[in-house]
Image 1 (cartoon, rainbow, N blue to C red):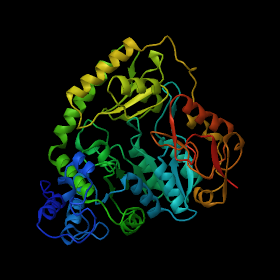
Image 2 (tube, rainbow, N blue to C red; image 1 turned 90 degrees about the vertical axis):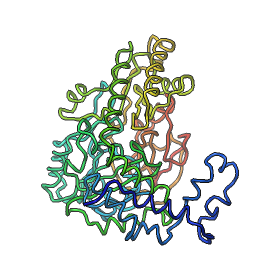
Image 3 (tube, one colour; image 1 turned 60 degrees about the vertical axis):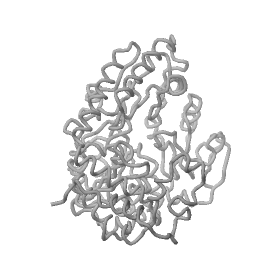
Length: 489
């Protein structure tokens, strides 16, 4: 039986970092001796002693036989997988590899329209054809949730030749759809269910959190261990169970999308984060849930504010679970947009949210937060309500969410065809009815509004301009000022 007390990769890295020797290998700074002084002043030299390459004792990420293999086996046991891969290029490369391993050129994959841009990259790389499903949308909250089992059933009935289904669980707002039912429907067609569980790595460690994707019978899930647990930024994991996924194809796909010079600092942080959760996860998550509940209770009592709760989801989705460590606060009752409230909290009150939208601010409460953080958050919202309240919104209360408009979209070319097609850049106002050749999305959360192959409509660029006017940021496209767009020539 595996011993979850062990941290084989971290121990090996520590031994290599402290071993006296003359280094004649990469990286060039030679364990910090050649690092620039400003960088050394900020981080200290200790961290650079452990910034090592694939030495014999440190194993090889793409052909693990030693400490990386041991660390991945421990992670698989801790998270409930049959096999786990460590990722150093974030969940982005995991999603890309999942699509590459299950879909080839021209194969269909069913996925929600509010997928992360990494899934679009996977479509471009693989040549797969997306069959997009509109997630359930709550027009009162102005929030898109999950796809429903009924929607998926209809799509599979129309496209029984699909090679895989990909879904997002949880959403950026912490909302979880009926994943077990979605898995059952997917498996009726003997195809795998792939899950973008980037924000759900903590689910396995407390019974009051939503059901983990693997427990709900997903075949593959990708988790950002850095987003909600204790790993370093970019450090993620890909988990597989069952026999619907070819593990050799996963390994080969990851070689295409991961660096051949992986950071051992990131890899070791995955090993340490796994040990931390395996040994102390329930206690840590209990504290986190307690802090989150304190924030929810106190903020919901502030006049003009409300928080996203389960009854709202049950009414709009029928079935759902909510990650209670994800706090979404509706600020429109203060006469402020989420963008305005975000700016005030960040610049004047010392509170930084995960992301803002037209009506809401969303916060990630994790094992790294403290009671002092929650106190500052509550006090910040108290001050916001007292000192910055307006009589009404500075913009009309319009539903601008692009998902409501996806029925007008038409995929004229596959994302891959459009991405590699000869293109030209035109002023935004001249792109109506043209085929988009790049990814365009407000950030965060990095959910594309336009992608290569889709027809651009007037309503789409009006939406994008509105997001900019309200303080949002457009990413993915070449001209982030959005004065022009790249289209297929």
